[in-house]
Picture (spheres, one colour):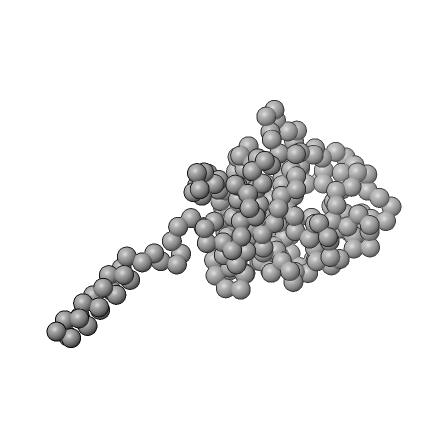
Length: 233
């Protein structure tokens, strides 16, 4: 009788393993430590920290379920990805973490019906990356005297990449000097980025048409596994 009980217990345990949900099952947002509390989420996933390519997917929370609305191939920094909290400026790495998306901008004019706050780039638009400037990691128009041109991006000169873009809230609310500035989700250029995430132009337009500030979208950037795994954020 005891042997029958043991055998039955083993079979029951095996049945439980077969029917158990694997740890990586379900939509990616369910596996993240945090999604920002909104009903929209963009994920940018690379194979590892040395990767310069990966996938961007945008998700909506509908009736309690995360649904993928679309995806596109993505490009990351020329030197891969780095933990956002320890990243250093000028390393051409994309910071990992969970970030808000303060506003959109672009060289191209916004289209009617666009819901996201949008700033159009002009000849006087700059993004200050000068660590000594009071305008560090901010859009400036015109460029202030304490923000050196050589330490900033003249946005109009990146007509392809900044045709459409979203500001990523990395090091933005309380900027740490030397951590990095000017991280965006933008249109692809010729290759890897200087630290941003980029996607094809058509995908960028789709993301902006989908994004709704009332649904509080966030961007999660990370790798498939390891210390910078996207599920940590």
